[in-house]
Length: 421
Ligand SMILES: [Mg+2]
Image (cartoon, rainbow, N blue to C red; front, side, top):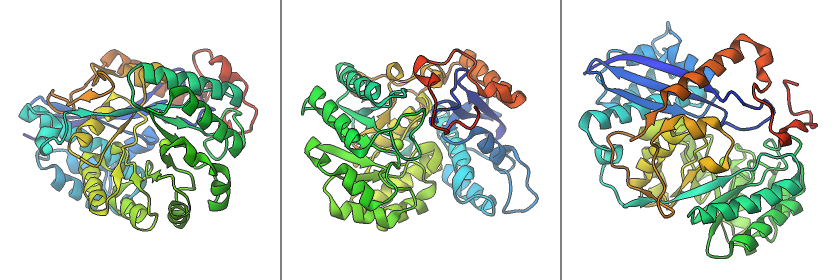
């Protein structure tokens, strides 16, 4: 069998909000086709136009090639060998960043293709499952502009998540730092108020994590803001410091008791080795598309196992990435949870509609995937609609404004962080 074609679909939610700091609004989905008529799908979480260029661009240097030109005509079964070959053949421009994200989408598609070819779920091709079910945690990020409304919505959503059967939820509390958007601003004290309000509402028999998304500029500011948060029994605090402040991460882990998690943006196992050995985090959060696909994510899992570090994959895209993470968790004993954006509790049309027959949650967990490959299928009608929206954006700069009426909360943007206004 040979790879006969690669399609790169740049997708955009037609109702996207140019003032939002959210990667759930666009997507790069790839399809790898073979001469046997079998196709694999994958996606990645990065600027999709940049990732597409990493795949489709031609190269004139043997270590500066485009990913597609190296992949076309290959036997798709030797996935690790392909990964290493693409990494080496793009090393001059790649090795980290967007190119690895693009490689991640292709690698995910190769694993889907391999599973479909063997009529076996990805986890069955890659090893032996260590669990019967995968536990998702609900990621909650209310899309509002006032902190009072944010707090109220967060409490309501956490209670809803519990009612939906989730045993865990993560609160995205981002009223300061680079993820503070759409006018949402509040102090560290008020952030603590939100954590307390949610803990009081969901009770003690519910796992809570907090993601502050790089909120604090340095260790001292972080320690001041989170003082006392240990009383809320948090499983971890995610991304409290700038991503490159690994020494700060190490000191934070040693100076307070809440486990520290990070790694959502990292590409390749090499960056994760730095995060674990220098940053001393307790939990690593590879995003499967970004880190370089299932091949590289499994390498990260092995390095984490050797160091006694937990793996909790990051996901902010669609049912494709959720499926990839479920297969990873099936193979990884030290992966207690996967991130899960509940379709009911998010505004992303991509998350809601791109995939049909996604993996279903039953009684708070996802049964071990049984279908061949990743086990999910694209909704072709939605794909065409999202593709058209992305093309409109490129054709017309004015389409950077939402096509659909803005949600009421998103109208009051007054913080100068909305470059397209
Ligand atoms: Mg995060």
